[in-house]
Image (cartoon, rainbow, N blue to C red; front, side, top):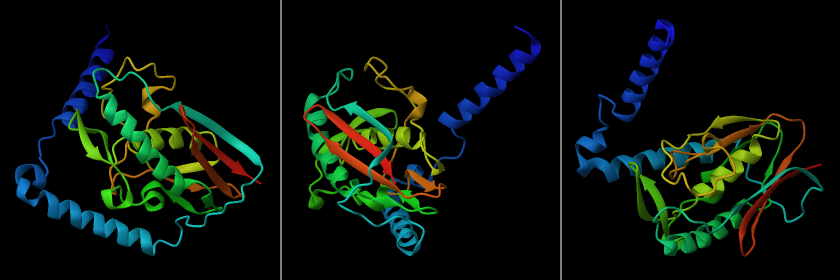
Length: 226
């Protein structure tokens, strides 16, 4: 290995170390008692920003445009290491609720799509159930778990239409490398209500509309237009 290649590799390793083991810990990590109020405050601020943001897409229609611009689907149930199949089955309920809110949304030229602004808070009161979540590199159970499958699918679709990605966070690790994935790991989009979002801006001269539904075996989605 050349000296230049070695230097580059050392630099990358140093950055990765800083990413996975940052020197400065978050206040909520150092003082767990402040975790809920800090998160609650951040969520309130973000919700207020979204409500005041006139560029965010909000219009829905039961009538769909005819031109299919992009389409994709993902399997609802698959082998994911030693994970509890019950959480995968309950995940389908969460995906079905999210699909109901996303289906028919129109993103006009210049407008921004926000997944969380469209889907809303995943809580028991709204019908969401415990599913599989990834927290601190571990699989845990949490209300609304499994919605990352929706964000992954939508992000992949948006990569094939004329939009710009305003906000997107990649998964920090692959906990299920043997899951028979078709799409590359780096194409995913992790989400956490409501300050880890998936946002895109329609930069085309045409409106884009989401068409999202579930079959017995798959989560399916299309982006349609005029």
